[in-house]
Length: 364
Length: 266
Ligand SMILES: Cc1cc2nc3c(=O)[nH]c(=O)nc-3n(C[C@H](O)[C@H](O)[C@H](O)COP(=O)(O)OP(=O)(O)OC[C@H]3O[C@@H](n4cnc5c(N)ncnc54)[C@H](O)[C@@H]3O)c2cc1C
Image 1 (cartoon, rainbow over the protein chains, first blue to last red):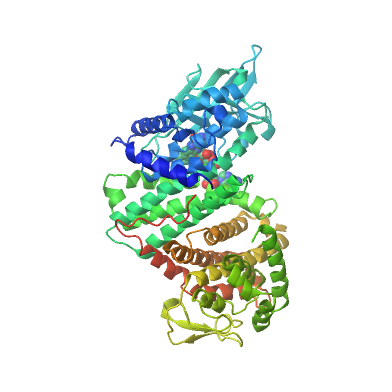
Image 2: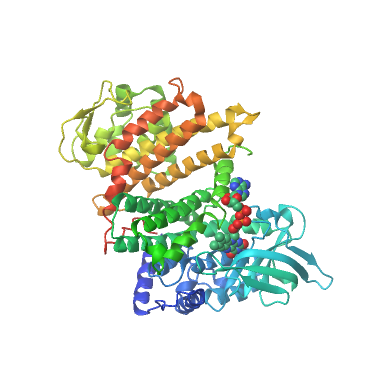
């Protein structure tokens, strides 16, 4: 991968000179503010623009540069990796589906840390069965669309200026239509949800007759399902690489802190991380070579979720009492790892996809 | 070797392995150029040959050659090889064995001299993954054929998820085998091989467990091929270090102030 080594060494040197370390505000407000600060600094220095096309304010180059940047950000603990990586699904969506002028205007706002965006897919009645969603968008005589419905588990909705929103405009998979909605539009109400790990990262979003201009539609009517499917390759290449880099830092921290080094347990966690790292590496090589990623990335997803949960289970075992009795980061991080088999398509849904699409086992 | 070369090689190897096994396969592979291939393209040669030994269920004493070659010695003979639990074994070039996998002429010997392990571990890793794929193919075919409660058992989610789990383990292990973890002689090369053997051993044992279950009673008979693969992976897992031993060895590297090696770079 040409140019990657040079990019990495330049980036490292720059980060050594420009300290972006977070303060000690571990609240979600603090994390989001830190994320904006990191994005702004990296954008201004150009790092954040590599790997994105010039049409949206990028500097071009292969997507793998974004993976390298995110790996460095995660390795240094500069930003919470989950929310850092959200751009990796949101920006490609805009590039592929928004009007070029809209993408050119909006993407730099996100990349430069001036805005946060969210992804409104899941609904109270539609989680794994996303295609059953019922938030309705109805065309009006004045050319706008009226959107009414409810979204749930929408990460960062309470901070977001915009939302990539899936709505229903007709029955079936082909009746799902996506919009790029301003979160300050009249009729949008956000109610943060308490999460079990105490970092209330997601919210319910209520949409009551929200007017959305027609030119905010992403793609054409009925393109929403394809848009949702097209996200997966992005989520499962660059984002995963970031998360894996983050998890390695937690393995190191565990080895540093455990009073009872149990080689079998530490080794198993390391092996699981190494395995998903190798798999993710191969996936990115394929992407880089122009391959279209598909159902095989469900393998990456199962490996990653499994590695993450094994790592934090091991942390709990080898740091007895710490997450139960002491404060500190292990408790929320352990708890958050429980969601790894839920978000982004549950572990069961991934296995269904593998059985159907990769093993060709026919209908359930 | 490019993709077309690899396909060609795989085709030739598969045909050979389908037609004979043991000493005859050993001889046939020598005939079609295994020694030269091992010398010229060790990585591709080992991946192709050992992966297909697993997939076809054939066997040949080629692990000796891989270890001998890495030690810089002449191939074609045998040497004592470490086995799990501090045992040592020799894999004879002819004859039969009396172990769990009676096809393999492996017997215990007195401890031998230390041998290089990286290439042999990768070879065994490929063999284990190949055997796992053979078991998965058998279980998949059975799941589609076998009808219970009026439908193929492949339609039951519990069956589907076991097979999916098997594929995940095998594909993960294969990724550790193909990853470039450093040039021969580097610490990353050694550790990468150790981790790959551990991942492959685990994956093969996972495959054995799930596929056996999906095959039900038929998979427990000696008439069905499954048991040959099950025996094979149990034996191969112990050679040059079992998944369990190697995982512990990897864990011992992780100590305060010693970050876990990040072995493959973008
Ligand atoms: C931390 C977090 C952040 C999230 N962020 C976002 C976000 O930003 N935007 C967004 O749109 N969504 C988000 N989600 C929602 C997430 O995508 C859904 O939670 C997920 O798709 C599962 O849907 P559900 O919660 O309704 O569970 P359900 O679909 O009701 O599933 C419940 C259980 O049933 C199982 N199940 C369901 N169907 C099947 C089946 N066919 N076969 C076998 N088992 C099945 C599931 O595997 C699961 O174990 C987030 C979730 C979490 C936990």
